[in-house]
Image 1 (tube, rainbow, N blue to C red):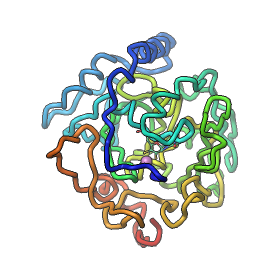
Image 2: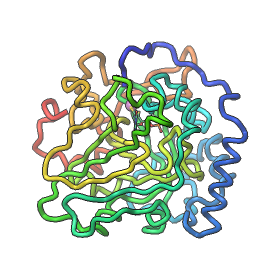
Image 3: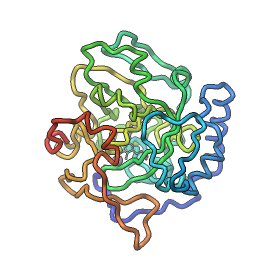
Image 4: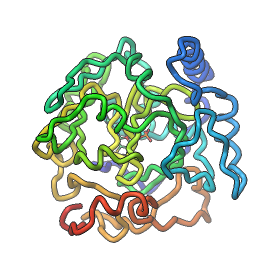
Length: 332
Ligand SMILES: Nc1nc2c(c(=O)[nH]1)N[C@H]1C(S)=C(S)[C@@H](COP(=O)(O)O)O[C@H]1N2
Ligand SMILES: [Mo]
């Protein structure tokens, strides 16, 4: 998202921003989760995932997914996976500041335990889910997805989670439920920018029910084989690879089923710039910049070429039918 920040220069995060302790801490959390059996096999082999983050998988050969490969096609393993350090130090998480380096510096104070997600609204089975219950609901899978930010950059990240549809089926939405709203944490005690006027808090996102049921929509608990670092939306977030990054709400506390299109945080802030759908679309420019190309984070050399942005971020074959007959220039 872009408010007043200058995006022309990408700051290379320096490696000291990622403390060995932070990585170690993440690993310890993972080991604890694995000890309770909650994390599932997909979170195994942290070292393996780390290695994966440094060396691109060999063309033509998919990296083995310890948790069992997903039945849905979402993998983009032929592309180099974004370096872990970049994915955890160049973030958008405005509750912790508007600079890309702010979340990595400030989010360590976020308290992610205990955590629960209230599932409510137009469902037969409303319930407050503890994080532990959520982790046990379905086996975790590793999914390598592109994430394209509306500001014009992208990353390739091995996320860990399961399809949101698993949870939706469990809570039995009523026939009247047409949308799903995601409300994320707004804790002024730990989030320095909650209370600032950059956005209306809490950060809210939403999907149409059929989008939310799409197997690519990932309820996400981990990345690179680790539990999510706080700056990436611990302990649970969405990842919607065919939509601009801001649709993928972080640190979710509430999932609400409604009959009305949710008013989302960015739509409230600038309706002419951020629509409800926000599908990645190279043919629909942002009012202030083109969306035709993108910069892959980590490819920032003087001679690095910008990449062509792909329709639905490259997931057109999987998701285009959701939008058949819609005018995507109007419903952007
Ligand atoms: N709660 C919350 N979720 C959020 C945001 C935010 O500011 N607050 N930023 C969004 C934006 S603009 C992007 S691009 C992605 C970035 O995710 P990443 O930092 O894990 O790459 O998170 C999204 N989720
Ligand atoms: Mo974004």
